[in-house]
Length: 291
Image (cartoon, rainbow, N blue to C red; front, side, top):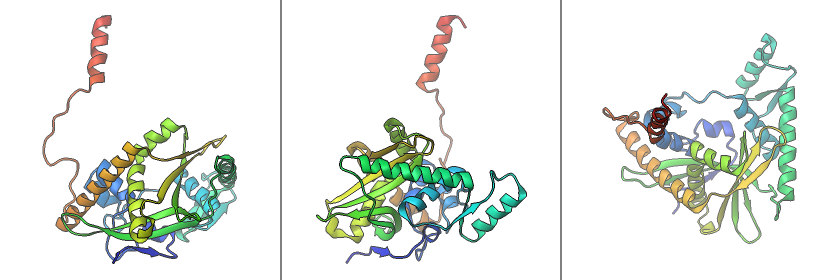
């Protein structure tokens, strides 16, 4: 019997606070484990170090666009101000956050509405068009096996669409500075989107085993500045495999760290720091130029 569960009614705030019975592994924490260190992952986890990432303007804009496009998310508080410099605006912002609402300025709301409109229009013009008419923000929990014991995991899918033929597509919306394909590729690696795809697909498969071989994953990269270009993207085979490997490595690391209650930093001893090839080439060029 599968131990996976789809948890209805879990809000993004509840999900990011970790609603599981014990601290669970998410794709974002897995990316921190793999790309930084267990110490950073411990600090970032809401049930362990509890020092989350401070909301930035870009993060708030992403949350707002998610709300407008997917129809689910925190309530929005539009602050009648041009910026956050006045005391009244800052107090209104802090009050909104304390009440669980997303504070945004008038112009930010207008920007987000323009982004949401461009996204919908761009998706409609695709061949075939993409219609986000599925279920939004689905929370899934499941267990992964590891050499150190079972690992409780969680995921929240932006949008899940299951067509008439029983094929599932997970859509994940990413607001970004540049939706140029090469930039999306770089961002996918830097932000751990390959790990996210691996985790989300595994979670959905555990919860819905009848979807085996019928799960697709599409990232929707949306530029935050006009003309708000949109790039739908699937991970290539090599990047997809890389994400699977990283996810498995993160699961093993998480299991060891939680079992031993030991969250090390980058290294456990002195390391050797060597000059990269570009530094040597640069010095050789300077010598050749007589600098």
